[in-house]
Amino acid sequence: SPAGSAMTYSWSIPGASPNNSTAQQPAVSFSNPGSSVITLVTTSPGGCSDTAQSTVTIYPLPDAVFSAPAVCFGTATPFTNSSSVIAGGSLATYNWSFPGATPASSTAPNPIVNYASPGQHSVTLIVSTTDGCHDTLLQTVNVLAMPAASFTTAPICFGEQLQLHNQSTITPVNDPINYFWTIQGGSPSVSTAFEPQVSFSSPGSSSISLVATSLSGCSDTANFTVVIHPVPSSAFSAP
Image 1: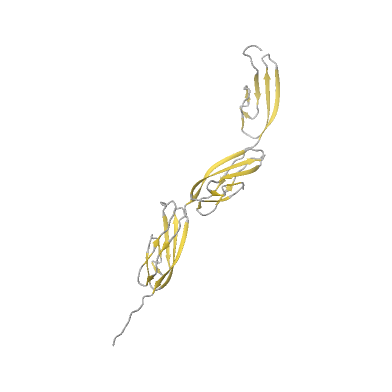
Image 2: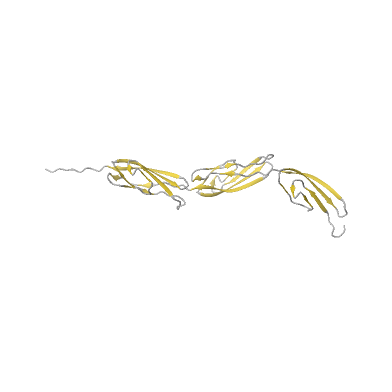
């Protein structure tokens, strides 16, 4: 061969981008699945040529899609898998990864998991078709902080005021909590104060309920029965 001469290549690739090339090993992409008859004409420095043809199959790519609602901590998180593949393909496998959850992984189409802590959690889903094509989606789900309602009090004598001591908590600790008290037979009978004081019109017992609710709507309830003791009546006489 003359110095500096080389083989030349002429590719014809219907449906591809680019659809023709003179590179020795071109890289192309297809906008639609299906098949393409590819033609390669190789020409020697002396002008001799040869033609080769081959049909390639372009399999459809799946689309990984899922969603999950924000749930209160302690409630299981259900995942809804909406992954799909266009006509001509079929989904075969699902591979989930749930760091910080139980289970930490799953191959179920629509798994349900429980997280060990509130907050934002990353979730990865890899879907694969029967042809071996796959797609990956990474997104976060939210587990809302859950308050823990708690309070203390002590029995009182009739005529005294009952002081309620609110010991409710939430994590993170700076999340606001709204409170709703229900005090059977008390005055007031309901309250939204942090630690209300209550009086009673008669001795006996009172069922007290505290509902602690976060700004996200997660709530917890604590109940306690307090005793209001009757006051003895002192009397005596002397001759």
